[in-house]
Amino acid sequence: MRVRSPARSREGANMTYCLNQATLLGFIGEPPMIIDAIGGRIGLMRLCTIERWSANDQARERVQWHTVICRADKYLPLFEHGLLAGQMVLVRGQLEHRSYTDGKALKERWVSEIVVHSIGGTIIGCGEDAGTMQGLASCMNEVVLVGKLGNKPKAHEFENGGRNCVVRLATSERFKGGGPNGEKERVQWHTVVCRNEALVPFMTGSLDKGSFVVVHGQVEYRPVGADGGLVTEVAVRPFSGSIIGCDRSAGSNRGAPVPFARNPGLSTGLAGRSRTWRSERQDPDADDDEVGEAPFIPSVAVA
Image (cartoon, rainbow, N blue to C red; front, side, top):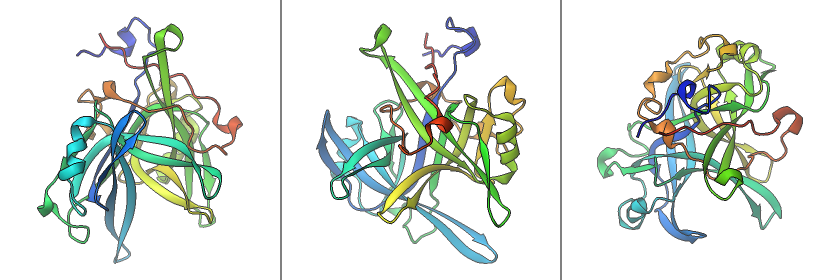
């Protein structure tokens, strides 16, 4: 399969690529299960990723618990008799957000999941001897997003003198369906938090609403409120993340401290397989004037 360059496609030079790819290497929590859902059976498991480092001669760690949904029938046998609690597993899927109604609180909540689809998704059990949660086995928590910004980046100052930058990023997929011209579009809105202060001037000075960017970060979950709610963010941290402006108006890509080429997603054709599930916004309380409507992002042209 050959993917045409945007500048050479019949649709013109405005054609752009989108990518929504999350890769996790971690440990299974409770035993995986299969449940009946609308449209067929799906696999469900909780996956733990651990990041360990040293600061001020003290050992620290950051633990993230991810919900993995498998919609690929070919991997469902693993959920029945192949994967075990505590086992290390590699998962590649899409970071997707959906809403549901909390029956106890009688309010709408949002949940984020790593969804494994038949195309582009992967689940690989690494064996019982790969390590344990208390062992020295390495984990991976990586997400790559290619899309357009929904708001102008703004810097947020803190009392200790530090600062970060929060933006909303849209990834999109167009596919054949019952919409106008026989096409449908799925849009996912992601909250990107840049915690690398060195990138803040680049974001506020060179990027704007509608800018086309590449984001390389980590999936993180932060508790909010007293009712146990969680906010999902794509965190861009120093030494482990990058933000690249792809528009000519953004100047150069000097805003990226980590070469993006080290991630194989774009070089192996996975950009053409990007998928999202439904058009939803993770934060219904976000300022509409700040975020704006989802910018149109054409899908990849395939010859």
